[in-house]
Image (tube, rainbow, N blue to C red; front, top):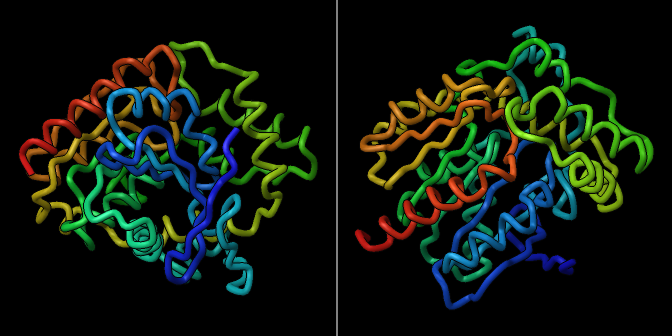
Length: 295
């Protein structure tokens, strides 16, 4: 297991880890809401690195070993979800600027950016706000706006489940969440899911930051107008049976970005089933290589 490094990314410090050779083209992975960088499986990251990329994963603000902005307080989620409030401590554009700050701190001029779920939303924002920093964009199981591809009732309920108080509870919670949002047609690696939940709790048991991240998703504006202006080579990957961000989110993302390519997977939910790693890694790395030759 790696010992994470930390860099000053501007407003926040971000913890990160790398896979592969720094001599290879950089590929930065952006994770989703309430999820630490560990949710990018080590062997998935290594598989990307084995294809000739220097892979960097990191904890977003308010999660894991990165800066927690507790001084900003906890937003009223009931008011946000019922439309009574549109106030949040920060928005996804701020998290996109964190990502750009990470690139600055690591001395990376241009990168291949891969974002999953909320990470896909952040990656889209980076492409809109800092297009000169991207060689390619890959948006995975994401959406251009919170109201597109809205979760099923069962999946939405998991976002409101109580935060764990112990390592064991954290492991149980992770398993129970992925039973609802995970892939229906592929076996779940329950031991890995539990281990990541427990390790995440050991790294940081704070839960307030997850609420601020979720609030940022809800208040951030529709990105489709910005995406329509992109000239960044874009790949969109999405599970056809994703209950947390339904496949409409992938279709609308791809429809918004000129020249974007959409690939969907029957039976895939809101996770990265190991049986699909060869095709997912293949799509991501071939897209990056093609974009790299054209840039």
